[in-house]
Image 1 (cartoon, rainbow, N blue to C red):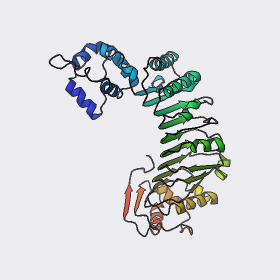
Image 2 (cartoon, rainbow, N blue to C red):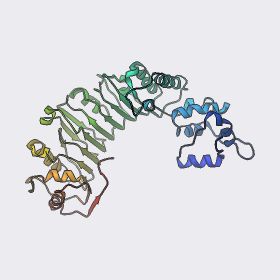
Image 3 (cartoon, one colour):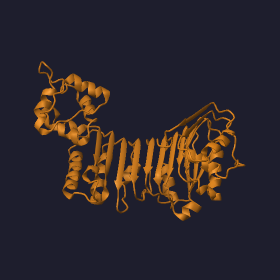
Length: 398
């Protein structure tokens, strides 16, 4: 039998943000007893629906649905839970490369049951992580259902065997505030895009289709504040302009490997964001980063592990160019290998500027053999430095 939990203890767990344990079917009587105080009054069930919906939002969706069997009061509460989270990763064995058809069917049926039985209330957050190869049409329908419920945050993580077309409504959703798409495929974009309320956009592992449609996406987010482009493939791109006046945070993590053509040319990424306060770049400079008028209010983080690649004149010129564009920042975080790449020739780069406004420097402790000398050379370019923080933390993993 499970351990009984008094209402006071349950409320304390809720206030602390901890997960409330959900009992097995054999322990349902204990759950019922736990929800009643010494006088036999069910304090939890007497709370308003909005509070109970908030409580259920802390549970995994599967467990939130299971609370419907606790009592008549709880029967339909889960149909209005503001957060839905579906993840099929538990269906796969970590030892062998196969999945279980029966479990997959149960997973898909469960997702559809939750969406079909849902009431008319809006969805705050919808997260879906699954293999699309099982049934792309059903996955498409699930996303569309979330959009019909005026979803505010859409988090999609897909493993695909062939290109998967996201519903066009994803890119024309007026209620959407946060969009996260992680998918090992070309992201096919519609001809018409309108994201009037989108504040945060994260793209991971996607392959950009071409200059025009990608530019259309970035130009259709007038209030975007945060943009993260993580391990995406730019091979089809030549020029892109990130010109978003409202943008405050920009993260670009380039792929560690790239096509030989991309190595020679890559994509020219022009960044013009007057409100920017945070910029992070991690990669091999296979693309040409062009920052326009970076202010002193920007905090920049750089991780460029290209000591060997720095022997390539094009790559090295891009490295120097990036430092030139960041000369006005007041706070800079860099990895040890970035310093080594900068001074790999064991002499002072002629074009390296003085960072007159830089007062704070953060450096990771992952230092190579030559990093100490390279750091001393770099410090000569920081005449107004006030704080130097050398730590074991990897500054670029945010």
